[in-house]
Length: 328
Image (tube, rainbow, N blue to C red):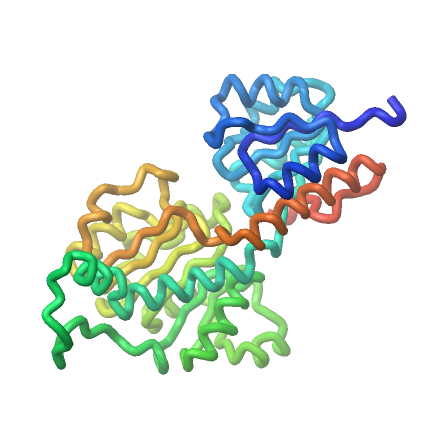
């Protein structure tokens, strides 16, 4: 009906400023508990909403979409990744999908460098010594890590975040190499001083540090598998701030334990919050709870993009961050 506000269901707690603005614009159901919706709660949500606002913790698969009501016309996801949404089935059912690209680029690139430095300079180990109260003072051979200047950084996935990582790495004096589904334009390569490798295997054998910045798709699942991990130098370090499914976590754990890979900094995990317990035991591994985009500024910006996508759709136009299957 003309003048009637869209019915919007939000699956997780969002920053207060975002929730306030949503409440002003839409007939919104906000989440009181900061926990993922159960499957039954998601089913009920897609049956009563015009717009669903899920996050990466919600699995919007074909089975769920098959139970959606006729009202549901837009899934305005809070986040850049859409591997938790069956975009193809949604489009077949006439449901649009939008996301929030770019909002977390700088924050995630910052976290990539933080993890890279944490592993190579053994920052968590130093922190643990200080917190234990057992520090005996400076010594010439104590807590020695490695210098990152001059090292080869291999970036897997040279989209927004990969390029932001490349810019930061160059400032630290690193040599930037990359593998991507498509080669960048020569002007961008020149700006980033980045060397392209068509062969991922060849790049992995030559880099000192690998940064995983590609999305999770069927073609990138376990892209870094046991065979490819064995191509890397024993002194190599792996950092992942993208999606855990890109790396075979069990294979990585085995090689870290055996010393065939020197270290890893992981912000994401193959099975969500079910982290391989053997990883927690390793001193050469830094684990973070998916903090890559966790800044107040970034999370509010993500919410603002969600609102713009919904408002544009409500005004009868194409959401600016529309996801289409051939993009994936």
